[in-house]
Structure formats: C-alpha cells, structure tokens
View (tube, rainbow, N blue to C red):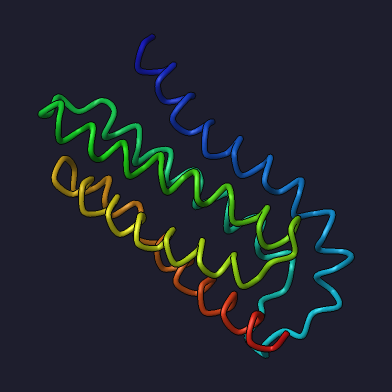
Length: 156
C-alpha cells in the first residue's frame, strides 16, 4: 500500500504542478501570445499539452524510482533537492512567460531549469540509471523550448 501511495504522489505532483501552470498559460495563449512574432519552427499549440503530460508522467515515475531506492541518504537528498528545484523552475516558467509576459526573464528561468534538469539526471544516475534515462526526453524538450523561447524573445 505504501508503494502505491508513493507512486500516486510521485506522478500526481508534477501533473498537478503542470496543470496549475497550464491554467495560467491557457489564458494568455489565446490573447497576448497570438500577437507575438514566432519562428517558423514554432509547433502547433495542440502539441504542448500531450507532450507535457507525457513528460510529467515520466518525471513522476523517475522520482518514484529514486524515492523507493535504498541508497545513501545524502545522495538521495541531493537527487531530490535537484528534482524539486527543477520542478519549481518548471512551474515558474509559465507564469514568467505567459502571465507576466516576460520572454526575456523566462529565458533566464529556462536556462537555469535546463541546468537543474541536467543536475537531476546526473544525481538520479548515481542511484538508478533507468530513472535518469526517463528524464532524457524532458531535457530534450526543454532544450527545444529554450531555443524557441530565445527565438520569440529575439523576434519581439
């Protein structure tokens, strides 16, 4: 029973955070965001919700795997610290970009986010290689999102 509850919490937390951030995103996507100049490689809007949903689920599964490992407490603490820090920056990005309408500051956030995701992958890999690999699609998507954020900032 304990593992089931942990799994629900581990997967539910990033999904909940993404959902809350998505509420703030949705209001700006149909207003302010439409007015921005975007690069030719800007994906269609419908793509973001399913991609992020999959990424949040993968993040949650990876965290669950780390949470349940019997590892050195200090090592696990570092891994979890990086995980929660990147999750916090992930949450902030939507507010900065869409709610505050600040693509430049969002770019700073997403660069820091990328660094923390890389750190999370590093620390997760010390505990569980499969958990670290589950975060690779996430860092690849955030890499693309960083380039997109930069392009939107430059074009506007």
